[in-house]
Length: 352
Image (cartoon, rainbow, N blue to C red; front, side, top):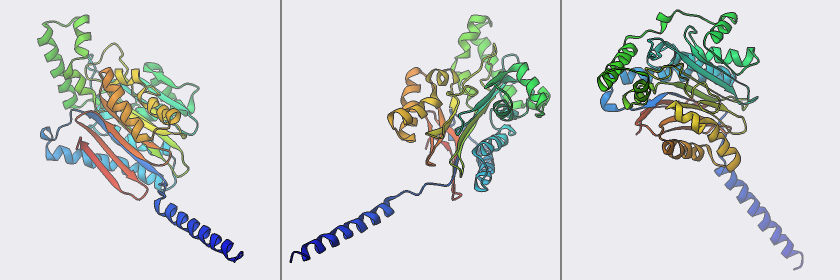
């Protein structure tokens, strides 16, 4: 009898252990090998204002862009390569406010900004206010990898781009009729409201709702590769009718772009002045790091509470170190797409 009791206990322990192992196996979530998420800007994007043809064009370009990054990641490429090449596709499309489709400044020029960050090393690169570099995201990466600096701007950045062999174009490359017409409409409204345009009224009109809604076309990408490395990048033409060398959040590390292998990679799109003040991209990472929030929780807190409380709007796309992806925004819509290691593609435009 004395020997029988220990045997019963041993059987019970083994049975319990096997059940626990089975439960853990059933409930364990398989970590994706890689993941990629992109955005093409957020703002007042309403289905009633979208033609079927235009909607199809956006969806096709989003699919084309994210598929480029997906193939790089699938074949063992780096998250940095995936981010850069994916953004190139959107920069080369007139559909988005970046590269070819950049909006016009008050001076009827195009000034482009971009940034990129490596989550493995926390190295980063950015460029601001360039007018001749075809693909600003390429310049941002070159600044990161080929210089001792993080950000270069204006003519100096363009000289560096030429020295590094990046593609340089003339200003007419960035000209698109619809973007130029948008600037003209804004200027007409500006003149009607004020009767004249002076420094004070121009400053006030910079924050007018008509102008505010015209800037949401920034493109961005966040990716996780097979080696567990995160990267993020953002590229934009800024805000229609911007002046005085205005720079938004897109080239600001921690505002428009942030990546850290310990937490997540984030790319932002929205009203840049508020995204800079809220340090949106870094804040999401910090909430995960310091408070232990999930990516979804952190993104929701920043985009649905912190940014609106300041008076700003916009959105982000992000992926965490476990391959979880998020597209969070507080506007009527955001052009977005996600793709996991199984090749499952999701594309969205509107809020619902």
